[in-house]
Length: 183
Image 1 (cartoon, rainbow, N blue to C red):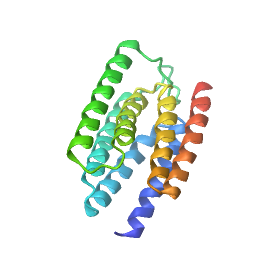
Image 2: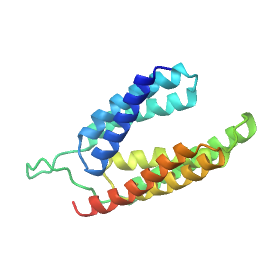
Image 3: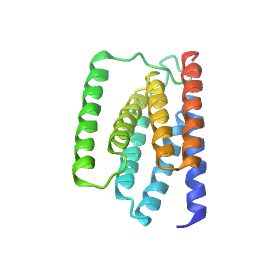
């Protein structure tokens, strides 16, 4: 694998998180670049499920650009939107369905080492990304759950540097919630 491409992907991931916390629309453009980098890297490593997840991020980044509107007052600052009950419930039910299907497939048809946590992290990540595209502040709470579960999953796998990275993401999500609350 090309280490320079991987480092570039890491840098774009950090930039993406920075812009996400700052509620800056540029995050979506960085997200497109990051997804393209990781699509390439995961394809080269034959990590096809991870590659398909990056395709989802690519599509959600395009959707996020569309959804994040400028404030009607002409101000360039983006606004945090009120969470709408119906779309939140529908998206939550869909995430539950993704979790159940994923867990069933991973448990019964693969040699997945942690099908429960892997399915939970994936389904909640999909949901949190959708909520982010809607600019709903509660996506940060989902990211805290995703990141804590990821820390546990990566520790169980002995992937301690990755677990440390997700611990950093956990604290960043907490900070992001408080930052967005003050917008």
